Length: 541
Image (cartoon, rainbow, N blue to C red; front, side, top):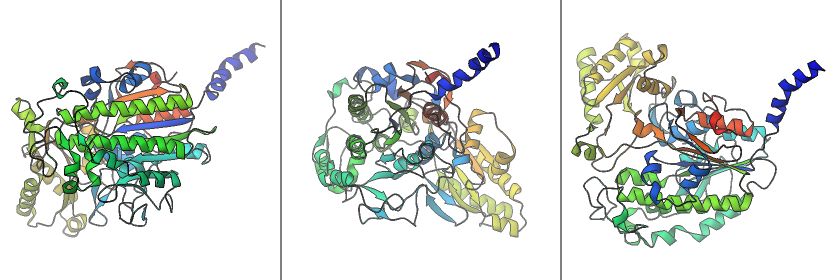
């Protein structure tokens, strides 16, 4: 009897764990270029049913961080869904130099596939460059393909990478003169009827034939700097970066339907597609968990043009809050409060416009990569009597011509060290690390460790460099960008809500790869194949 009691105490917790309720539907939401402080800065203006509902009734991981560089859209989405970093999943940037073909390649390009939905080449895409499974792949395996997986985004990479290799579909927006949601022959030969119906309505026209006004009286946007300032970009044929933005008048000079991407209404048409997908695919209607991966791209386009302190960014997030509220209300009305699992995060943040920082006596600057590259080649010619050593400089990496170095017995490590020493003398560069060091040393310094986790042995360059805090590549006379290992790019929101999620918050340091591990725990399925994350225990009921 005593032995039976002891066995029961050991076995019963595992049995009860196996009986945890699984959600009917998982909705993964990624907001492209959402800094963590957008939650707090605009808090008082948000409604009760969008961001505030996720925070107040879900679980808020207040210290969620990317743990690699460069912090770009492709690597961000890949890291969220694979539960690891570029060193393992292989998506080292949006575009990178392919040292085997000596060409630049795009993270989701696939010449073997064709566009579905239009006659353009915008659908020659697939997830084949991703070398790890995703949590969505693992769901397909766990349900023997009976759980559906759909990825949607304005950007192709925002739809394809989250959806993974086994997805039922991924859809993205083809702007220009098309204004249609499209896909790839990797997934299908023809768009399903529900997507065709969405395309036939051309909902984008409803917003592009209007004017972008502020949602609230413009004087109330006190969290942002003046509307007319020298730090913001303009649409083609606009005289100043100020409200109202007459979208109807700007369409022809701003690539027609592509204009909607750089307005908050790009978020709205994606919200409409998300709701249509749930209905059209009958997501959540059976006992097998389905997964809808949604990536809101427009905040990134708007952030690049106007910067984090702009009224345009503030208005974008107030409008996104309303779109989120509509999605959450729809899901609760359709499924109830405890049958859907939702998480919301971002693929990276953004630095304040460097010129704005400079004018406010804060450290920042603009780094001239073209000049640095020319100077580096000149320096190497003096040192090695050749100007053929550098193959490419991109994504804060210097790629060298290995064959030439080997043929001339120059010594790869010798050339790497020479490049590294040169880079460290350049104004605006704080660190330079050789590939040899990255392969042989495990760094504990947070910035260097971030660089190391972004280094993929087969795809990355020979010397990596890190710019000073606040610095970005030259070429941004207005607006801003991202990509660094610093907190303004790495610290992002992470909100959980729904099935299996506690109510609460935590200031514990967590990393983005922990997201996929936590989803795996909630769904009781395998983690992705290259996962390095751990479940966030405090989130779990």
